[in-house]
Length: 238
Image: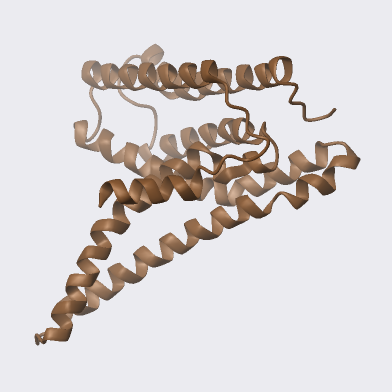
């Protein structure tokens, strides 16, 4: 069921657009940046600790995965509209005509959230029933199966929606990288606000912990945009 949930989420939120640029070197650098960032985070927690220990760090990671698409839904349209507005006048109508795929992906994600909420609400109502019938048992079984499938589906959908920025490469190949920069700084501010301040450790370790992720992601994204322009001819303003 988990494999099925992952495949379905990838099919919805990882749809290659005509403008997507597949650069293996960029993909490898992104992967190694993520690995080194994760190792650095674990080392900082191991050396200096965290408010809620390892479980708190794991919960924080899950919260970030689930928050990323929501932040994109609320702030992404501003970036996309600004992107289209900055494009040459002759290209704006073309870019607007390609918004169907991202809007469809956003609709899917909102539908997933509503579906999870309805299943959880139905489960809560059934649990309050103080009588048992065969119908209630069958409904409870169906809801249980739904929850087992929907929760990993929501997790994978959140990860893919954030990774591919709701299929905005359909609009322009450079949009996912641009949205990634905006998103990583939003998540950093959200994390600092949620934790109520800087992490444990001396000032140098604190600032490395807070800024290491967004600065490195921004650097990789800007390098990706540079490669798009110099190697693949992708430009925002032709």
